[in-house]
Length: 194
Image 1: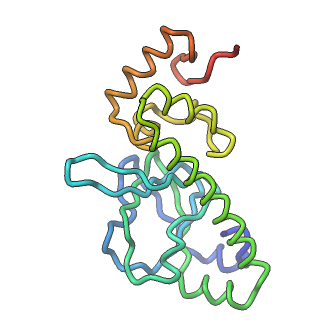
Image 2 (image 1 turned 90 degrees about the vertical axis):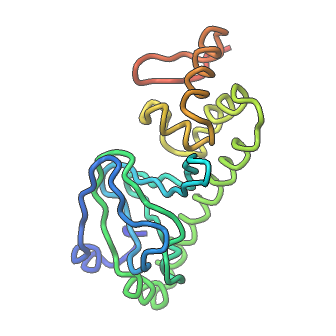
């Protein structure tokens, strides 16, 4: 979204540096800003009653997030830096004024949101697979649709994204590696060819 907005609006927008694990906002906070990631990754997540944290979306470099703030009074989830990150904060009222006045900008936002919807539907498909092995294999198969390759993300982040506990994912990776279904080194996890 930011690349579609007038350069002067983006240039004047405040930046915020976040350390890994630092919250940008929490569910229930007043929704004034729409954000974009300049550096790093920011997860939108919701803690559940059993202590599990459900990842709703991971915004990567160049992606906007919290667009719902354009039409809501409160944020509906938490935003936490998955890695050290820098975000741009655009005033929602100013962004909405630009989107209203410039149909091309609004259309570009609609296109980007449609890409996010496709990726979220793919994750929903993945999370509905019961077998942890099949879930991880499908995640790796759908990487072109999901964006960032898994070698850019720690296993704990992948576990949160596909709805598995970390321990379950570690065991699953080990079993699939032993079976020859996937290959892994320190920074890369991928399906084996053939």
